[in-house]
Length: 235
Image (tube, rainbow, N blue to C red; front, side):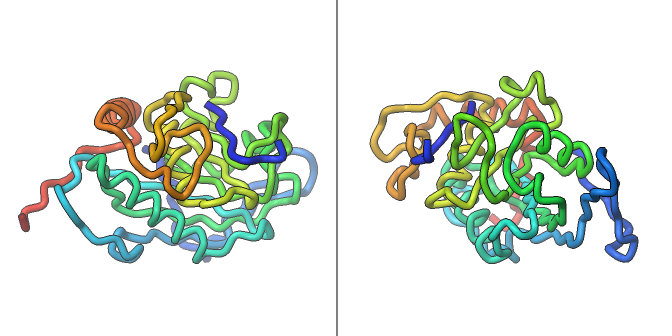
């Protein structure tokens, strides 16, 4: 389910407040992973407005942003909002996002399976999880990677996660593409101009077919990543 671009090649984290200064020591000395900020933003706070048919399924995301990797809060939230817009035609509505800001030693700044597993074990964030990192040390090197149930058997901590690097173009489209891989638990690509699941992401590749939507809703619900949407009594 690893999907590259143009490369050089329901458990929630609960805090009693940032005043707790939650810290977890990681293996290998005094290195620490520190949660330095957390906020939950609703769909309204993300600037999302309801259009078309009401969603049948609800999605809540967790975004983990590593400090000193070049990502800004504005960029991350703009990308999440674009993901919401791309999934809306499948009647999947984003209800909100938990935004976690994390300070960690530099070895965690680039995606590498051993470090990523350690990071995920320490944080235990809600799923599905979007990780915003600096680069990758995996080979072959991809701008973004999706890890679903089918390709996480040897690394269960990483199930239901997407890892996106600063090299990724069109970040919102790339994230949506990878998130569809996770929700559908499939690494399949299609050769259909304009489809979000084309092998290489591009600004014009934004659409999903009825069958693709049905698969991501069915599998995503089965895996607990999507929930039945509450009825909109205002309609």
